[in-house]
Image (cartoon, rainbow over the protein chains, first blue to last red):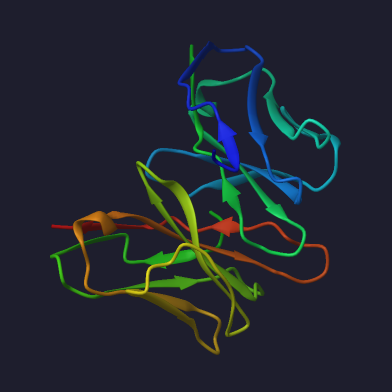
Length: 111
Length: 114
């Protein structure tokens, strides 16, 4: 079993929809949680970073962490065609910078 | 633009050869990380350097090595290349000090081994 599980998708939604992307993890030592967006053949771009349970909002993006369930989510409101990309969750224990990535969910937002 | 630069963008080489990938971190960042992204393995952490010293190691093959220089740029050396080494190689950097922890990725080097 992988330490971080992420549904690969693809997820196809109409423009304006609310998108929910999720990851589950098995290592209770994970303390830092990040979401990256990766366009095809480009470097991952950091979207959200959090280190505690609860919600964190940044514009159209909301990151949610539930440590008791070992579950994290990224919500995208009012999705746009430019949001079409692969979304990667990543996490790390407290005492190391080593990031463990999910396999990524491919999102397509159609006009 | 994350501020992390990587060269070259593309590299095509033959099996058994050796290549060097270069990374310059964001201004002020002390940590450099190397990752490999392949279709079947996803993004895998290889190695981290902090201010010139190796800090953490991941799934890095013995044929691969890295170093970080006094000006903080880093190089990843891949030798005795095999077909399976074909992948995207990313460098990331972080400040690794105070409260800043986020890792910022460069555009990557696409390595093709033929």
